[in-house]
Image (tube, rainbow, N blue to C red; front, side, top):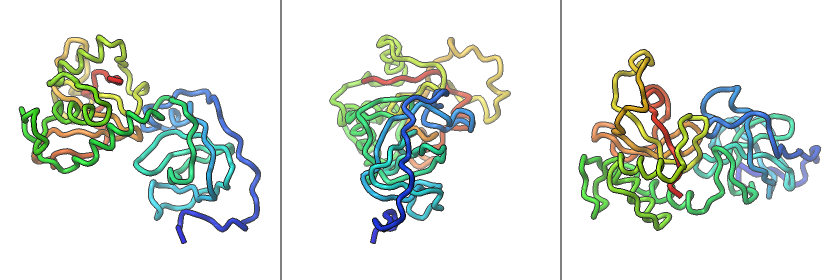
Length: 256
C-alpha cells in the first residue's frame, strides 16, 4: 500500500475550504520567512485521500489529513510534491499524484507546462561537470549561461542569448524583470553580481543598478536554485537560495 494514501473508510473530515485570495504576497514560493508564507496561492483539489507531511518526502512527519474532494491551496512545488495550505491554515507537503491543480499561475507557483518541461530538462543534467566558456554545441559540460540556454531550447523551444549578461538584457528588454526576491516565480532566471564575501555587510552600500551580471541561475521555488558555477561545487546542482546568493541578487524574470 502506498504510505501516502489513507484508508477510504476513515472517518470523514469537514471539507476544507479553498483560499482563493490571501492577504500577503508569496515570497518566491514561501522561502523567505514566516510572515511571507501566508501567501497568494493556486486553488486545487485532492484527487485521493492523502497525508499532509512536514517535508517533501513519504518519510516526513504527518501534520494533517486530506480527503478526496477537499479543496486546498498550492503554495509551491518541490519536485513531485506540492506545498499546500488547508482551510484551517495548516501547511505541509502532499504528493502531486493526489493533488489536482487548477489552471492558474500565482507567485511562486506556475501551471505552465513549458516551465515544468524546462525544469525537467535541467534536472536531467544534475552532476554534469562545470566548464567556464563551455561549448554551446555539446551537453558534456556547462557554464551557467550555457545550462540556461540549453534547457530553454529543450523545454520551451526558446533560444536564449549565449551569455548571462545578454540573457539579463533579454529579460529587461522583454519587460519581465523583477527586483525583489519576493516577486520571483518558479522557472524565472535569476541574475547575480560578483561575489564579495559571505556576510551581508560585504554588500552594504552597493549600487546594484551599476553592477555587472556575473552569474545566472533558475529559481525553482521553495528557496532553491538550479545552476552551475564551479567544478568544486559539483557541476549542475540544486542549491539553496540563501546567504551570499541573496546578497548578490540583482534581478530576475521569466523568458517565457
